[in-house]
Length: 289
Length: 168
Image (tube, rainbow over all chains, first blue to last red):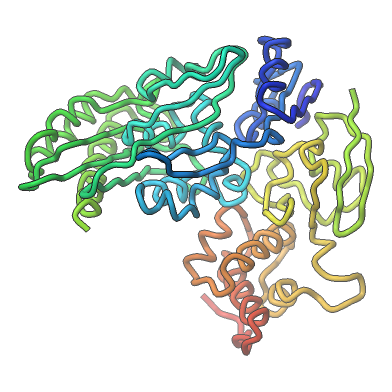
């Protein structure tokens, strides 16, 4: 399969990339890892007239810690996320999630920024970022703005990134001691999108009380979904089988999965509940280590 | 508008003028006439087109040739010198019946190459996860896993495991 013809640009700086995006407008697409975009171009579901390859832009490939925040450049590859000791130290969830994203070759190309900016609720990092309460830096001609992850996803393939802008950094607050995180998705085979997936981060304070909680769900809604009622039922009290069961039940009730080859709506709701329950247990175990 | 790119393929430098939409795998097979790299699914699922781009295994059906500008590529043709001894991975696949039809083999070899570079003594589980992006429809994978273990031992300078076939 061959993509429709396009003009290829490989800017060497962020400002050059942004001016190209402004110049070409809707006819341009950003090429990052390319493992969602190039397949779509080969199928001619995407036919950009201009392809702006941002891979040559310096300063977008860092993973660093700074003032209680972990900063991840948008060009950081999934494989780098997978093997980062800094990320593993604060967020064990990244080892869980990256292992389940596509396969090793795809992870050598695919980027964290692309996984979010693609705006697909079937991707795995959106739910993780909801659980970790991340924010996203978006840079345009006017400079940079920071958008909380809850205001980032608008609809199918639609995010807060506007024409002429590039997602440049992901910022995640480092949680206090006593925090654990975990992710799992049900997939039919390696590289498949999630039938359902659940990301959980929990902080357990004195007397076992849950002092902070984030729960994100993958591929069971038109946009990545925060399980609000599930979070509320856990917050401010000690974890118990009863609250965990309620959190799982609320997640299965509040999601909106569509029936497809991966399963019926009822099945996906059930799986979502099971995954939320298991990930709460796993995150809590890690919080207490 | 065509673009001029410089790529080093198996140690040889090439300057090529390519259409931006040319896929890397087509550049390798049809421009450079190196047909060791196979096209299987053409959808980045099967791993038959796996090559090394700056030492990292990637699926060349989902990368544009222009993205390889200034980079170095290793294909199966570059694993061993022509007429010279086989690479330990190739020897391992040969000794352990790690292939039947051979269609997936070039991709398996290049993927295993990066795996052993990062993890010279992988467990069976790590090998199976490591080749999870490469499909083989003949072997059932057992002998591929054994071939990679065998190559790992040889590359570590250890005694290689017995190559008695396993009947399952």
